[in-house]
Length: 69
Length: 524
Image (cartoon, rainbow over the protein chains, first blue to last red):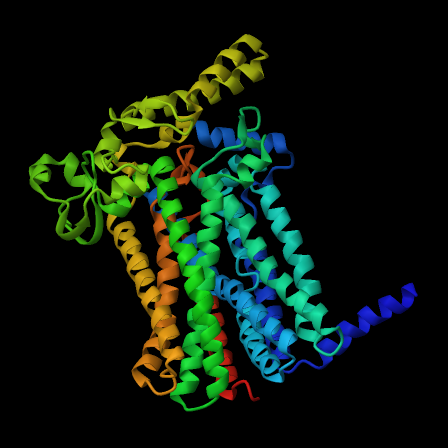
């Protein structure tokens, strides 16, 4: 019964994706956009400025220094 | 100077991304509800016409959703990179609402979106309809949590500042989630999205009528959109009044900028239409040689007597402070606890802010030295002055005045276009009842032209909200110059250019696909 439900869910999505027409173009756009966002923008242009600090204490100290300088 | 350019570029980058994101979000929210209404007709009547109609608008919804989805994530990238001090200072306040939004969006999108698009012949009619409604409510709920986070920045409550970590810690989730600013903002924003969705449906349907195509489809779509749009607009105006009241109580400088109000008295009028005098500005106030005192704030204005006093305080003869009044202080106001207070001058607030910042430094020095008594003294000094913490970063009192012309004109664009949409919806309902919609080309052109206007109106609303609260990222607690990271201006400039290119390509792609789908029509 459990397997049958999982199968039904699988085929629901599988058939849905296979029968898409306009959806295929839209998915392509979504994938390209996500690739640009996460693998180009995030990786090369948007590093977390506080990421260089390993602990929360170090991050706190840095921000306190920034705010009180 | 370098910092000023970094702050301005970081603001420009954030504004560009937020405004682009907001092109897509309102149509998703607005169209979702209209689609659900149309599908309800289908399930209740069993008429295949409504299924075809619903499916067409779902296509428009899908294109808009696909192009717009995840554009908001770029804003989160920017928090970490360009606004790291701010992100840290905000603490866990954003964490809870944004986590709820993320989880909600994920489950909704993987489950109910899938049923909505893939499930037409696979689940029962009622299960499909339920999914469509859940998507409609889900998109609105998803927006709720973002707006709660935004409202907290405009009116920070329900938190306590921790001087050990320099973070704000949430102590009352419900105070954050149900703050009057958040509730008004949510209703105002959601109804704005419903109005936008309605105008888009009327505009696209009118294009078919102009082409003499899909007459029944267009007329019925227009009827639903006009009624839904009008009801939404009534709620929008009511919540706008509520938002105006909240702004007057929590962000008086924003209200003064919205009105171009420099010096006030009891029974303040509301400017219905006006042209600002460019010579009247706060820089001129500092430099007396320009003759600031002689300059009137408006070249021309039509005002509603005592209107602003009524909006701001619910009393016709009440006092609404202008920009100069806020800078100089000394007037009496009722605080959020309902107690009468005398307003401090901004200079005094700056002194108190500096005291709070100094206390934060002393606290941490005492902590490092193991001086418990010193820590307690510093903590008390910090907490006594914390409500003015952000003023400690302000160099000149005039720096807390936002861009008055931009806020003033954006507010008027929003209100005037809002008035225009009331007329549009009423006219649409009247013309539809008289069966004139299919024959009146002028109406069809008017409806099509209204589509860009509703986007301008929606963006103008956000300009009022966000430009009007400058220089604060968190009202009174953190200004933009203390919020930015130490990144280089040139790298921010590069990303602005990259975003501009990416956003332009995405927008062109959306428009190209949308036009193609519209051209094919619901019969395709």
